[in-house]
Image (cartoon, rainbow, N blue to C red; front, side, top):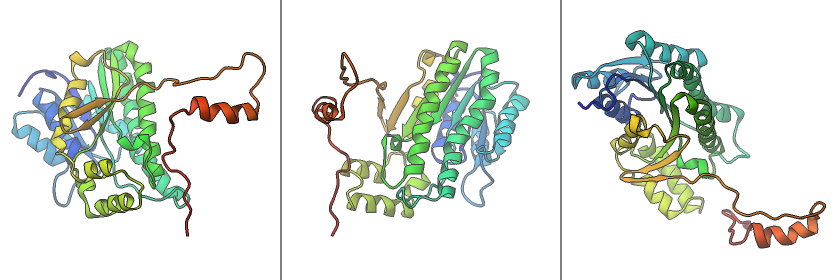
Length: 305
Protein backbone atom coordinates (compact mmCIF):
# COMPACT_ATOMS: atom_id res chain seq x y z
CA UNK A 1 0.00 0.00 0.00
CA UNK A 2 1.17 3.51 -0.85
CA UNK A 3 -0.08 6.90 0.35
CA UNK A 4 -0.53 9.23 -2.64
CA UNK A 5 -4.29 9.14 -2.00
CA UNK A 6 -4.20 8.57 1.75
CA UNK A 7 -7.20 10.12 3.46
CA UNK A 8 -9.17 10.40 0.20
CA UNK A 9 -12.51 8.74 -0.48
CA UNK A 10 -13.35 7.49 -3.97
CA UNK A 11 -16.41 6.23 -5.81
CA UNK A 12 -15.71 4.06 -8.86
CA UNK A 13 -18.79 3.11 -10.86
CA UNK A 14 -18.81 -0.06 -12.90
CA UNK A 15 -16.04 -1.47 -10.72
CA UNK A 16 -17.30 -5.02 -10.39
CA UNK A 17 -15.04 -6.26 -13.15
CA UNK A 18 -12.70 -5.26 -15.97
CA UNK A 19 -11.31 -1.75 -16.16
CA UNK A 20 -13.41 -0.42 -13.27
CA UNK A 21 -12.24 -3.19 -10.96
CA UNK A 22 -8.60 -2.51 -11.89
CA UNK A 23 -9.04 1.22 -11.23
CA UNK A 24 -10.75 0.68 -7.87
CA UNK A 25 -7.97 -1.64 -6.68
CA UNK A 26 -5.23 0.70 -7.93
CA UNK A 27 -6.83 3.69 -6.17
CA UNK A 28 -7.11 1.65 -2.96
CA UNK A 29 -3.43 0.68 -3.20
CA UNK A 30 -2.61 4.38 -3.02
CA UNK A 31 -4.44 4.66 0.29
CA UNK A 32 -7.94 5.80 -0.70
CA UNK A 33 -11.12 4.35 0.76
CA UNK A 34 -13.33 3.12 -2.07
CA UNK A 35 -17.02 2.63 -2.76
CA UNK A 36 -17.24 -0.05 -5.45
CA UNK A 37 -20.31 -0.29 -7.66
CA UNK A 38 -22.16 -2.21 -10.30
CA UNK A 39 -25.83 -2.68 -11.08
CA UNK A 40 -26.51 -5.94 -9.25
CA UNK A 41 -24.80 -8.91 -7.58
CA UNK A 42 -23.27 -11.38 -10.01
CA UNK A 43 -24.47 -14.98 -10.12
CA UNK A 44 -20.95 -15.94 -11.21
CA UNK A 45 -17.67 -14.09 -11.62
CA UNK A 46 -16.83 -10.78 -10.00
CA UNK A 47 -18.98 -7.86 -8.88
CA UNK A 48 -18.77 -4.83 -6.58
CA UNK A 49 -18.69 -7.04 -3.50
CA UNK A 50 -15.82 -9.23 -4.71
CA UNK A 51 -13.84 -6.13 -5.71
CA UNK A 52 -14.44 -4.60 -2.27
CA UNK A 53 -13.40 -7.84 -0.61
CA UNK A 54 -10.20 -7.94 -2.65
CA UNK A 55 -9.39 -4.40 -1.49
CA UNK A 56 -10.05 -5.34 2.12
CA UNK A 57 -7.88 -8.44 1.77
CA UNK A 58 -4.93 -6.17 0.98
CA UNK A 59 -5.69 -4.13 4.14
CA UNK A 60 -7.62 -1.42 2.32
CA UNK A 61 -11.08 -0.06 3.09
CA UNK A 62 -13.97 -0.56 0.69
CA UNK A 63 -17.77 -0.76 0.69
CA UNK A 64 -19.80 -2.26 -2.18
CA UNK A 65 -22.89 -0.51 -3.54
CA UNK A 66 -25.27 -2.22 -5.94
CA UNK A 67 -27.46 0.02 -8.08
CA UNK A 68 -28.02 1.42 -11.57
CA UNK A 69 -26.52 4.91 -11.63
CA UNK A 70 -28.38 5.80 -14.82
CA UNK A 71 -31.23 6.42 -12.36
CA UNK A 72 -30.88 9.86 -10.77
CA UNK A 73 -31.97 8.80 -7.28
CA UNK A 74 -29.72 5.72 -7.27
CA UNK A 75 -26.71 7.86 -8.19
CA UNK A 76 -27.56 10.16 -5.29
CA UNK A 77 -27.66 7.18 -2.91
CA UNK A 78 -24.28 5.99 -4.19
CA UNK A 79 -22.63 9.34 -3.53
CA UNK A 80 -24.33 9.61 -0.14
CA UNK A 81 -23.00 6.16 0.75
CA UNK A 82 -19.46 7.53 0.50
CA UNK A 83 -20.37 10.33 2.90
CA UNK A 84 -22.23 8.03 5.28
CA UNK A 85 -19.48 5.41 5.41
CA UNK A 86 -16.35 7.54 5.21
CA UNK A 87 -17.43 11.12 5.91
CA UNK A 88 -16.56 12.73 2.57
CA UNK A 89 -16.04 12.25 -1.17
CA UNK A 90 -12.88 13.32 -3.02
CA UNK A 91 -12.71 11.20 -6.18
CA UNK A 92 -15.35 10.11 -8.67
CA UNK A 93 -14.49 7.76 -11.52
CA UNK A 94 -17.40 7.34 -13.93
CA UNK A 95 -16.58 4.00 -15.49
CA UNK A 96 -20.03 2.39 -15.64
CA UNK A 97 -21.10 1.07 -19.03
CA UNK A 98 -23.05 -1.77 -20.54
CA UNK A 99 -24.08 -3.64 -23.65
CA UNK A 100 -25.00 -1.37 -26.55
CA UNK A 101 -27.08 -2.18 -29.61
CA UNK A 102 -25.31 -1.85 -32.95
CA UNK A 103 -27.27 -0.59 -35.93
CA UNK A 104 -26.92 1.72 -38.87
CA UNK A 105 -28.64 5.02 -38.15
CA UNK A 106 -31.64 4.22 -40.38
CA UNK A 107 -32.23 1.05 -38.35
CA UNK A 108 -31.60 2.45 -34.85
CA UNK A 109 -34.67 2.27 -32.61
CA UNK A 110 -35.63 4.86 -30.03
CA UNK A 111 -35.18 2.28 -27.28
CA UNK A 112 -31.67 1.43 -28.47
CA UNK A 113 -30.75 5.11 -28.58
CA UNK A 114 -32.21 5.96 -25.16
CA UNK A 115 -30.69 2.94 -23.44
CA UNK A 116 -27.16 3.73 -24.58
CA UNK A 117 -27.40 7.43 -23.78
CA UNK A 118 -28.69 6.56 -20.30
CA UNK A 119 -26.08 3.88 -19.58
CA UNK A 120 -23.15 6.12 -20.43
CA UNK A 121 -23.88 9.83 -20.66
CA UNK A 122 -26.73 10.13 -18.18
CA UNK A 123 -24.95 7.92 -15.64
CA UNK A 124 -21.92 10.19 -15.78
CA UNK A 125 -24.05 13.31 -15.37
CA UNK A 126 -26.06 11.81 -12.50
CA UNK A 127 -23.00 10.99 -10.43
CA UNK A 128 -21.28 14.30 -11.21
CA UNK A 129 -24.42 16.21 -10.31
CA UNK A 130 -24.55 14.69 -6.84
CA UNK A 131 -20.78 14.71 -6.21
CA UNK A 132 -19.94 18.19 -7.49
CA UNK A 133 -21.61 20.12 -4.66
CA UNK A 134 -19.63 18.20 -2.05
CA UNK A 135 -16.38 18.76 -3.91
CA UNK A 136 -17.13 22.44 -4.42
CA UNK A 137 -17.69 22.95 -0.70
CA UNK A 138 -14.45 21.26 0.31
CA UNK A 139 -12.50 23.02 -2.50
CA UNK A 140 -10.95 19.77 -3.74
CA UNK A 141 -12.03 16.98 -6.02
CA UNK A 142 -11.14 14.75 -8.93
CA UNK A 143 -13.67 13.60 -11.54
CA UNK A 144 -12.54 11.18 -14.25
CA UNK A 145 -14.95 10.02 -16.96
CA UNK A 146 -14.69 7.01 -19.24
CA UNK A 147 -15.25 7.71 -22.92
CA UNK A 148 -14.02 5.81 -25.99
CA UNK A 149 -12.13 6.39 -29.20
CA UNK A 150 -15.58 5.92 -30.74
CA UNK A 151 -16.22 9.61 -29.95
CA UNK A 152 -14.22 10.34 -33.10
CA UNK A 153 -16.91 8.58 -35.17
CA UNK A 154 -17.67 4.92 -35.90
CA UNK A 155 -20.02 3.32 -38.40
CA UNK A 156 -23.07 1.32 -37.31
CA UNK A 157 -22.97 2.64 -33.74
CA UNK A 158 -24.43 6.14 -33.72
CA UNK A 159 -25.96 5.77 -30.24
CA UNK A 160 -22.64 4.82 -28.63
CA UNK A 161 -20.64 7.38 -30.62
CA UNK A 162 -23.05 10.13 -29.55
CA UNK A 163 -22.82 9.05 -25.90
CA UNK A 164 -19.01 9.01 -26.00
CA UNK A 165 -18.81 12.41 -27.71
CA UNK A 166 -21.32 13.68 -25.16
CA UNK A 167 -19.06 12.57 -22.32
CA UNK A 168 -16.17 14.49 -23.88
CA UNK A 169 -18.36 17.60 -24.01
CA UNK A 170 -19.60 17.00 -20.47
CA UNK A 171 -16.00 16.65 -19.27
CA UNK A 172 -14.95 19.94 -20.85
CA UNK A 173 -18.00 21.75 -19.43
CA UNK A 174 -17.60 20.37 -15.89
CA UNK A 175 -13.89 21.28 -15.95
CA UNK A 176 -14.88 24.88 -16.57
CA UNK A 177 -17.66 24.85 -13.98
CA UNK A 178 -15.53 23.30 -11.25
CA UNK A 179 -11.92 24.28 -11.88
CA UNK A 180 -12.06 27.48 -9.82
CA UNK A 181 -13.06 25.39 -6.79
CA UNK A 182 -10.03 23.09 -6.97
CA UNK A 183 -11.94 20.33 -8.74
CA UNK A 184 -10.66 18.83 -12.00
CA UNK A 185 -12.55 16.81 -14.57
CA UNK A 186 -10.80 14.73 -17.22
CA UNK A 187 -11.68 11.81 -19.49
CA UNK A 188 -9.98 8.65 -20.67
CA UNK A 189 -10.59 6.58 -23.81
CA UNK A 190 -9.19 3.10 -23.09
CA UNK A 191 -8.72 0.00 -25.18
CA UNK A 192 -8.35 -3.01 -22.90
CA UNK A 193 -9.34 -6.64 -22.73
CA UNK A 194 -12.70 -6.46 -21.01
CA UNK A 195 -15.22 -9.29 -21.08
CA UNK A 196 -17.47 -7.31 -23.39
CA UNK A 197 -14.72 -6.41 -25.87
CA UNK A 198 -13.43 -9.99 -26.01
CA UNK A 199 -16.89 -11.58 -26.25
CA UNK A 200 -17.65 -13.67 -29.32
CA UNK A 201 -20.56 -11.44 -30.34
CA UNK A 202 -18.37 -8.35 -30.32
CA UNK A 203 -15.53 -10.11 -32.13
CA UNK A 204 -17.98 -11.14 -34.85
CA UNK A 205 -19.22 -7.55 -35.16
CA UNK A 206 -15.68 -6.17 -35.42
CA UNK A 207 -14.73 -8.75 -38.05
CA UNK A 208 -17.79 -7.90 -40.12
CA UNK A 209 -17.04 -4.18 -39.94
CA UNK A 210 -13.43 -4.75 -40.96
CA UNK A 211 -14.35 -7.07 -43.85
CA UNK A 212 -16.93 -4.61 -45.20
CA UNK A 213 -14.50 -1.70 -45.08
CA UNK A 214 -16.15 0.11 -42.16
CA UNK A 215 -13.07 -0.23 -39.93
CA UNK A 216 -9.35 0.21 -40.61
CA UNK A 217 -6.94 -2.71 -40.22
CA UNK A 218 -5.06 -0.78 -37.52
CA UNK A 219 -8.17 -0.27 -35.38
CA UNK A 220 -9.33 -3.85 -35.97
CA UNK A 221 -6.01 -5.23 -34.71
CA UNK A 222 -6.08 -2.97 -31.65
CA UNK A 223 -9.60 -4.01 -30.71
CA UNK A 224 -9.06 -7.73 -31.25
CA UNK A 225 -5.70 -7.89 -29.43
CA UNK A 226 -6.18 -5.53 -26.50
CA UNK A 227 -3.90 -5.16 -23.45
CA UNK A 228 -5.08 -6.13 -19.95
CA UNK A 229 -7.52 -3.90 -18.00
CA UNK A 230 -4.83 -3.20 -15.39
CA UNK A 231 -2.89 -1.17 -17.97
CA UNK A 232 -5.50 1.59 -17.77
CA UNK A 233 -5.27 2.16 -14.02
CA UNK A 234 -1.98 4.06 -13.54
CA UNK A 235 -3.07 7.12 -15.53
CA UNK A 236 -6.41 7.24 -13.73
CA UNK A 237 -4.67 7.12 -10.36
CA UNK A 238 -2.34 9.93 -11.46
CA UNK A 239 -5.29 12.10 -12.53
CA UNK A 240 -6.69 11.68 -9.00
CA UNK A 241 -3.56 12.93 -7.24
CA UNK A 242 -2.46 16.35 -6.08
CA UNK A 243 0.25 16.29 -8.77
CA UNK A 244 -2.48 16.46 -11.44
CA UNK A 245 -4.14 19.57 -9.98
CA UNK A 246 -3.45 21.61 -13.10
CA UNK A 247 -4.68 18.98 -15.57
CA UNK A 248 -8.29 19.83 -16.35
CA UNK A 249 -10.75 19.26 -19.18
CA UNK A 250 -8.41 16.90 -21.06
CA UNK A 251 -9.10 13.65 -22.92
CA UNK A 252 -6.50 10.87 -22.83
CA UNK A 253 -6.17 7.81 -25.03
CA UNK A 254 -4.81 4.68 -23.30
CA UNK A 255 -3.67 1.53 -25.10
CA UNK A 256 -1.36 -0.40 -22.81
CA UNK A 257 1.81 1.62 -22.22
CA UNK A 258 0.87 4.03 -25.02
CA UNK A 259 -0.80 7.10 -23.54
CA UNK A 260 -1.79 10.02 -25.74
CA UNK A 261 -3.64 13.29 -25.24
CA UNK A 262 -6.12 14.67 -27.75
CA UNK A 263 -5.58 18.15 -29.12
CA UNK A 264 -7.81 21.02 -28.18
CA UNK A 265 -10.42 21.78 -30.87
CA UNK A 266 -9.27 24.77 -32.89
CA UNK A 267 -10.40 26.53 -36.04
CA UNK A 268 -8.09 25.12 -38.68
CA UNK A 269 -8.72 27.48 -41.59
CA UNK A 270 -11.01 30.38 -42.37
CA UNK A 271 -12.18 32.49 -45.29
CA UNK A 272 -13.35 36.06 -44.87
CA UNK A 273 -15.28 38.29 -47.23
CA UNK A 274 -14.69 41.95 -46.44
CA UNK A 275 -18.06 43.17 -47.64
CA UNK A 276 -21.42 41.43 -47.99
CA UNK A 277 -22.22 37.74 -47.73
CA UNK A 278 -20.68 34.91 -49.65
CA UNK A 279 -22.56 33.69 -52.68
CA UNK A 280 -23.15 29.98 -53.14
CA UNK A 281 -20.99 30.09 -56.27
CA UNK A 282 -18.11 31.64 -54.35
CA UNK A 283 -18.40 29.02 -51.60
CA UNK A 284 -18.54 26.21 -54.15
CA UNK A 285 -15.14 27.43 -55.33
CA UNK A 286 -13.46 28.36 -52.04
CA UNK A 287 -14.68 25.72 -49.57
CA UNK A 288 -13.14 22.74 -51.42
CA UNK A 289 -10.06 24.69 -52.50
CA UNK A 290 -9.26 26.51 -49.23
CA UNK A 291 -11.19 25.21 -46.22
CA UNK A 292 -11.05 21.56 -47.27
CA UNK A 293 -7.59 21.56 -48.79
CA UNK A 294 -6.09 18.10 -48.27
CA UNK A 295 -9.38 16.71 -46.94
CA UNK A 296 -10.48 13.15 -47.66
CA UNK A 297 -14.06 11.97 -47.21
CA UNK A 298 -13.95 9.11 -44.64
CA UNK A 299 -16.79 7.28 -46.42
CA UNK A 300 -17.10 8.39 -50.04
CA UNK A 301 -20.10 7.43 -52.15
CA UNK A 302 -20.19 3.90 -53.48
CA UNK A 303 -22.22 2.34 -56.24
CA UNK A 304 -24.08 -0.80 -55.27
CA UNK A 305 -25.00 -3.42 -57.83
